Image (cartoon, rainbow, N blue to C red; front, side, top):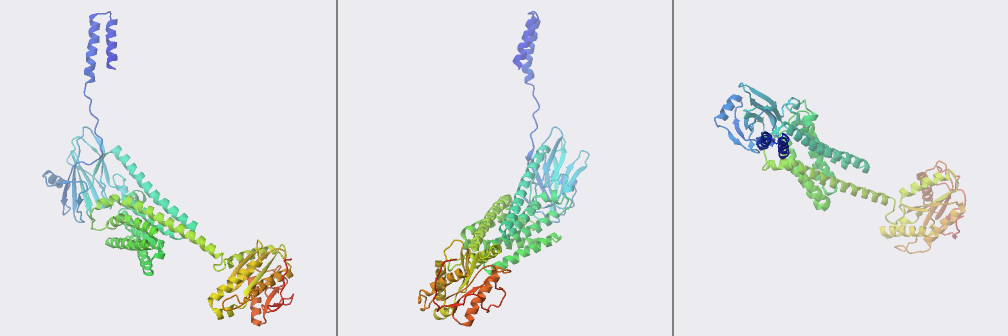
Length: 609
């Protein structure tokens, strides 16, 4: 650009008629441009993005010294160099002071001093003015966030640094040792930093809320109460994290001072109680009765402590002792789960152990006790909490899927008899109800037979339980060999009784012929049962419509006919219940129709009508 202007200057001189003055003017411009380009410009100020300036630390045991007196002590060199992360032994009766040296400024500059120290009860910012007065601002856990100079997750103070101002002071009051921390920001950089922190906290609480919703959906989907305990744990942890991180004080209770500590104690106890109830329910089958009882008592105790803390009573060391006891009990439950179910127990143990940093740092928050490497544990506690919830959620999904599969298997076994492989009573009742409804539109649509092993008690007395199973299996084979038509249902009721449902257009004589065939099959192989017994079957059957009957009543009526056969000891083996007969009639009354048949009769067979 300079060369371009110089060339134009020379051209102007040439255009001036090649006079020496024109040439001198162009040469002067050419020589002046480098001088103008080399004129020094003021350097832009260095941005303050979380700057940690030097500071000095001084303890005031009585807590009664004025800022002017403290400033004089600092000027006399009484303060010690303060290091970020240094532990300050705060006590209820004392005050600790920090003198923070500010970098020099050439012009007024809007800055923010952030003090990210947890559990500070009262924090007062002192900035000296030019007329020997002091500008003060106050923040801390005891003061509502709505009254802070800046509404933020932690105390922060905004002011304008003037040229020549080189130091500000902080007075710190608390009940337990804290790690010193201070950061200096430009106002715009601090706003960006605060926005990022709020977005991260929002994502964290949103993830916990999503886990709560998914757990509720899973509880409704599987009709299982186990996800409700996990949902309660996640909800309590979300409120606890909001109280500990400052988000709750900023948005949920901004006008109530001291509520963060109360809400933290209450919801932390609730989270611990729900967590222990959740893992004990998750591996209930692996725990002895005394372990289940102890877990239930400790879980309910957490709910009681949560209610007590919400009422305003400080728990203090009681909450710390309860948290330690719950964590140790959870470790014992997880260990027993590992011994019983290795994969599920490993996920449960990993999740509970990763919850340890959060548990121990949290339970000691309201006490004067500290842990070794507490800063490291506090830094990794959110990460451990996230990994812990992931593992516990996987364990919950594993258990719910396993319980669902077991439920499906139970439903399948409920429909199948385990001894014979036939349908169960539940299946035959469903299909018989359906058949009765269809018979209202079409008479004689189907037939029902109730078949009983007539000499079951005699077989049991002679050969015991194995003979009963053998007789039941032989009876099921005899009936199955006769009935092979699709749509027919053969089910076992138990105690030697079977039910046969047949669909089709039946006449009474055809039903009787089929019943005779079944009885004959049982008599065809004498002496085949243990003890040399012969299978003797009795049949009560019907074909037609029975107004006002349901499946259960019809089966009871047929069973009554079989009981009547056995009570008379007449040796009868077959009884037909006519369609027009009243189902509520006496079970011992004989049905009209063909004469009852006995096992000694000459039996013949004929096909279905």
